[in-house]
Amino acid sequence: GAGLLDAEATRWGVKIKFVKIQKIGTPGLEDVLAKKKRADLQNKEIVISAKAKKQASIIEAEGSRDSMMKEAEGEAQEMLSRANGSAQAIRNQADAEARSIKEISRAIGKRGEDPAAYLLALKYIDALRSVAVNDNTVVKFLPRDLTSVMTAEGFGVNTIFPPKSG
Image 1 (cartoon, rainbow, N blue to C red):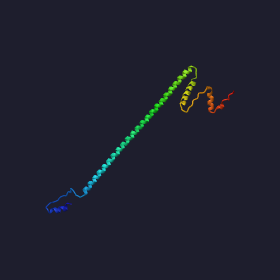
Image 2: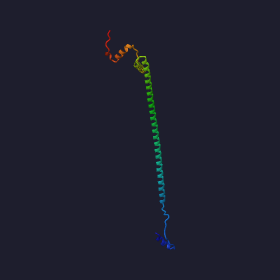
Image 3: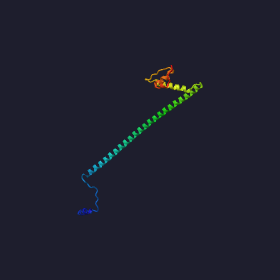
Image 4: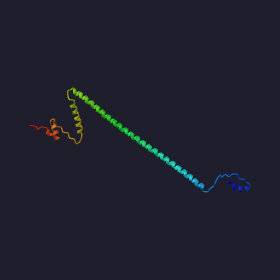
């Protein structure tokens, strides 16, 4: 490469030993390369921005999911606590009723009466009270000797009673 330059330069009395190229100028190429570099940088910015938005969306969705899960767990715990409380109330009521029945049986038994008949009568009164509060219930008080006959006839089982002899 230095041979052609050296031949030309010797006419002027200059000797060329080596040639070093520092810059080659190409019109328009620098502009194209600069545009490409700017486009690459813009593409990288877009990708980085999209990744950041995606990560933010993921974090927000995970937070929302975790919040809903905690809320559901809280509601489940509340329901469980209510159920446990209701169950305990039922157990307490049953225990109190059992103690009451034992005490009533003991007291009535001391007087020589049948505690089962007394307790059955109490249950009958409770049942009658709960039925009587309905609007469409009619309560008729009958003489004691007619109640079994009227009830049996009402159910269509009057054939089991012997005809009344007059």
